[in-house]
Length: 86
Image (tube, rainbow, N blue to C red; front, side):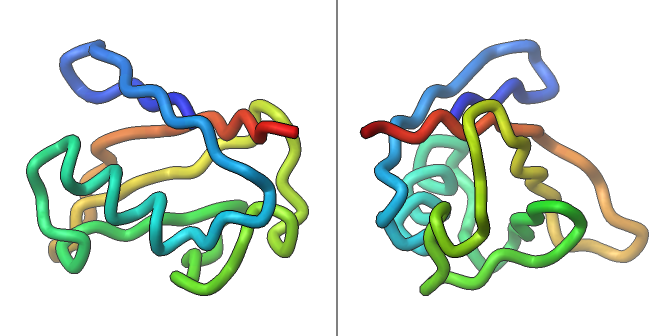
């Protein structure tokens, strides 16, 4: 997963198609120093559950995961491209 934040910096994650998204969400939140509970992760406009995997979500290379900070009105803080490993 590759993420470009508001500052233009990038964070890269490499995930297997069978990795539960909760693990990725936790890693991402630690990297950006924010609580997982304060972030919302969306794929194709739907919230991602912790127990789902990229395979279950039918993700392919370069699919985008949107990450929003939880607040009234919403604020997009990042977009990420998933790059599954074999």
